[in-house]
View: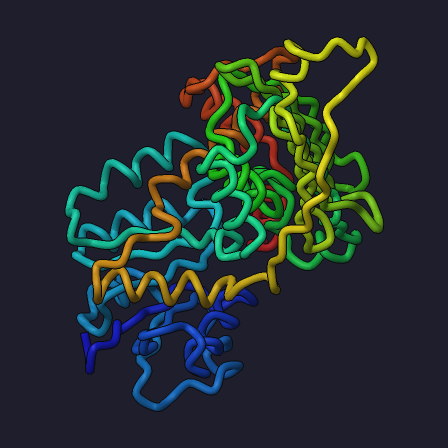
Length: 379
């Protein structure tokens, strides 16, 4: 630590990593000082106005062993997240890893198992947990204001991407380069929020379409149905092929209905719980009267910089983590289960067989066009 600040090393200076560094240098990331950065492409160092005392590295193992940092922020390609996290934890460093924490459940479990020193903070960049809408909704659920939840429906189709997006990198939307499509790139945020709000389902049944709207080998259209042990059901719909798309979360519960859309929360609250009305009403076509409650929230919260600030607070003050990395396995498992369900055209029970998904991923990686692209580039 330096002057009650965390000495932070950033691994990966692509668009997101460079953005994190700039935000911290501008003082938006809490009590962090960027003391080292790493990228295999040294040209990226020039694109950021780094202070003269920031060390630069082209190999992550050199930064991790340098003694220049107390913690690392991992913003590298998805497949590297587990090994880099484990390497840093074993070196005695605090770790904050970008989403998804891993591509597959087995690797996420390896990361969790490697976190054996409770004095080290291990967090994930689930920045949408800082959004006041979802924090307020989680509070309503935890305080049982909604009563028993019966059904959840999240349509998250405003992830539209044109073909040029996928053409911007040979690794994009390939099994071997990225490990998946919309479920691994765009929707980990909503999958994390889903389990953060509602917990994990008992089973998942999904239809995934691969290259439905783009010339890609991975999924760009998903419709999933989830069943919970208490009888609740959920539908999760996502795609990168619809414009303008929708972001609408609807929850049906005993005390009414909640809709989260366009930055607003509306609670259509039953004056009498639905279950009670069903038992007591003599009106054969009746239904409870409803109060329409607009629940106020402001803005989208501090997002990435908020997670960074919480990470520093946890290291320096022992503050509770907003997004522990161990919880990242849940969104990975949901994505894996949806893809495994689509492959076998049947429901997948949770906890999921990690080995079964690993075998599927390895099969798809073996025929991935990314291998051919790299081979041609080496010639």
